[in-house]
Length: 101
Image (cartoon, rainbow, N blue to C red):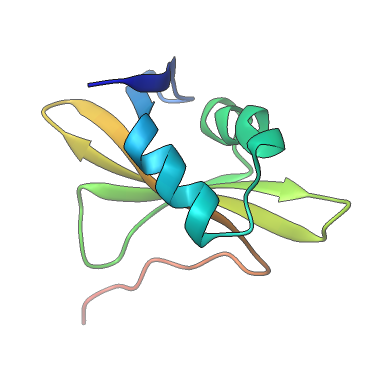
């Protein structure tokens, strides 16, 4: 598989971004090629890491952008001890993990 990058996140796990996912992100979000370093920073020094509510193998990494007054969200899926980025985009709010009652 062709990787754009592989990096160790803040918790010590390896996470990678494939060329296919990078192309998807560029075509379907407000992310540009200039945001690649910010995506890496969101993984290594996030403002928050929030597990996704309905899939324990997924987490959202957030990095606050003061200029945009929004968060860069980087969604990661974990498989066999490694993570891969599924998507990334800017959002105004953090998504809180829902708890089952």
